[in-house]
Image 1 (cartoon, rainbow, N blue to C red):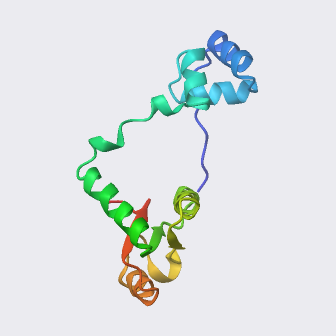
Image 2: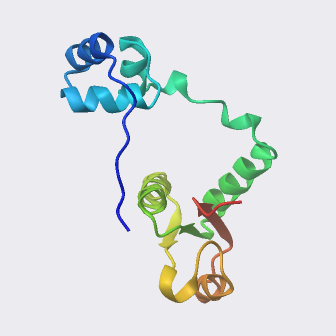
Image 3: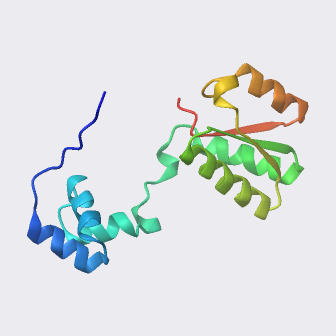
Amino acid sequence: MSYRWRFHPDHAPLQEAIARSARLSALGARVLVNRGIQSTAEAEAFLRPGLSSLSDPFTMSHMERAVERVLAALRAREPIVVYGDSDADGVSGTALLTGFLRAVGANVSSYIPNRLEEGYSLTDRGIAAIREREARLVITVDNGT
């Protein structure tokens, strides 16, 4: 089985403008255009997003309760485990959240399951491993729904 890359038609003026303004190679600019970027401003926002571009996390259901629970765990120095997925964004998200919680004084560790042995997402085996750590709070990162 062989795969073949398909590119959208060239948009040379836009690609050149993006490459210049964002200091990208022609190929990098082309990739952005293929992703739907339609201006140098959109390219800049995509490549260097600011906090103002993030959506409000409190629009998520029960976020207030989740924040209160984490704060309670921090105050009580309860053991917290950040349970992440084994892919690139799961591992990096787990490291980022674990590092942040440690920086604010949490009693925190992380757990990333071996996908080949444990499967994907939150598993019984993973929960058993967390119980051994006597964690009182588990925060999942990139584990699907």
